[in-house]
Amino acid sequence: MNFTMDSIYLDAFAETARLAAALKDTVAFKLKKRGAVVGVSGGIDSSIVLALCAKTFGPEKVLAIMMPERDSSPESKELATVLCEKFKVPYILEDITDAVNGFGCYARRDEAVKRVFPEYDPKTYKMKIVLKDDKEAKGKLNLFYLTIIAPDGTVKSQRLPLAEYLQIVAASNFKQRSRTNMLYYHAEAKNYAVIGTGNKNEHEQGFFVKYGDGGADVKPIAHLFKTQVYQLAEFLGVPEDIRKRTPTTDTYSAEQTQEEFFYKMPFEVMDRIWDGWEKGVPSDVIAKVLNIPQAQVEVVINDVRQKIQTTEYLRQEPFSLG
Image (cartoon, rainbow, N blue to C red; front, side):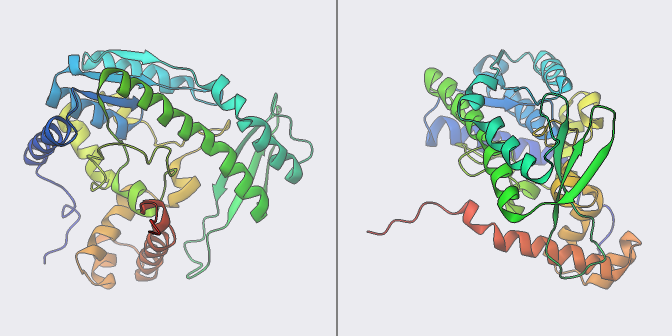
């Protein structure tokens, strides 16, 4: 095939029409539900899902739920509100701080952080987990570092021991699971379906929480690369401020991009490498088209392959032993 920088792009009109028809059929006839509930965060993925649902069912049969907690960026709520008003979708604000605090989310997380940095005070410090940028370290495992930011702006980073990494992530996952509980409350109260917002990058590489943001009745964009999500967002009229916003995890108190936490490189590069790999394009051809070293292409392919394999359990249904 003729692989180019534009090979990844879709026919936006045709794909939107196909998704709308499939979504309507799935929700109305297979699930026998009356409408759609969507969790909105001000991010690009939930934005195109909301826009798609409004187009498919009409805004009056869609309910958007905003679910901030104390570590959430105020910008998330602001952009989510702009989004809902743009598409005339009714919305509800559900602050989940008390819910996740009741589970011990913050206390359990901070306990692990303090074992690495005893001076950490959650009232005045900020924290995040970052993935070491090791594109040149072919074949090496991903290494996570804990970063804390003091009140005076001093930044400290240290490699996370496994036990502390697991505890911080497990505690933080209360947030996503609490949000899914809230979505299903509203969906069941209205006989609506919960519509997932995960894209291909998240779904296939395991960048989601099992029974958290991975839980939904329908996942309409799980086959779309992030690059394609941005393409459809422009076609569907998602507000420009959302389309220009850098994708974030919005999970930890310090600002953090999805790239530094999980993906390690810009979506526009990673997606094209992955797309070429899936289409059987040789790595040297991909490298030439993207004007990057072939070794870097192969590192990205290996990283994607490894993440797909090691996170397979997240996509599996529970095993029946009968």
